Length: 74
Image (cartoon, rainbow, N blue to C red):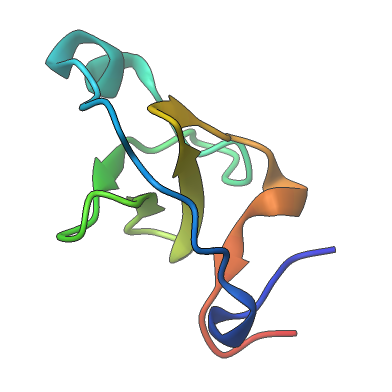
């Protein structure tokens, strides 16, 4: 199930993601696989197209659609 913004985890990002990894990560929910970008708080990777935010736990991005957070949607 997709989480809403009010159901966010308090996961931590203890290790920064490498630029090389950020270059190859893409949104698994969108058909054209757009790139994802790090949020300002470094806790999520966000798809600018569908607005899903994928959590980062202990420096590992969790790129599962079921784990993504979608603002304003249940």
